[in-house]
Image (cartoon, rainbow, N blue to C red):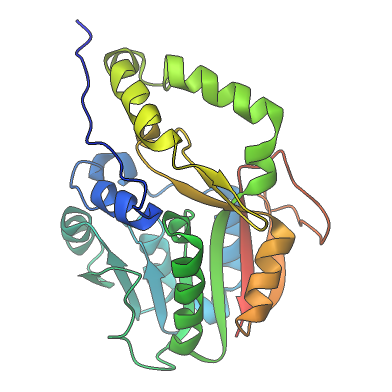
Length: 271
């Protein structure tokens, strides 16, 4: 039987971060992220920047340590933070070479200036924030870095979100859910529609970015989407120099390219 779903109404004045924090801080996603599997671009970046990643490393939004385990094999000084106590407890048991703490990436005031050689913000973690908070966090990350410190981050690609085929794909996912979990997807059909009604009205398209209620976790979150060139301008404004931008297959994305085939892009910058 398909159960009727209910979800609290989203207030018009709620920010993406407020809504997303409530979802990501729950402890029911550990099994979803308890993996060691790297995407091709992540493997390439770890290999390419091994020297910087061998120093003092801070990982923001470490989740269940999918990336942290690999980083801790390179560096003896890796620290991960995440909103979810369940995620942190899992990481502490599974990756004892690294250190972990429950923490909100919106508040990095407890970290010392210049304390890290590299900061890693994987799996589009900064995109749980709205525009102003996201810029603030990027600025705070720069303070934490040692001179010529390295930032590796990924972000949802706005050109992908605006592509007509992506809109068709979202409509299909709304109705059918994940093909890898057909029974769960059928059961969660009312929940997806409830989430879409609740959060869809909070989507918006601005000059430099979009806020999108995408299919992640049954349409229960809002994500920030930005183009490659707009992200480079943001980084420059905050004192960074972009070294390279790569798609999920580790192919270079040059200035002016949309990479609309790719849902997320990976950025490497120095501060």
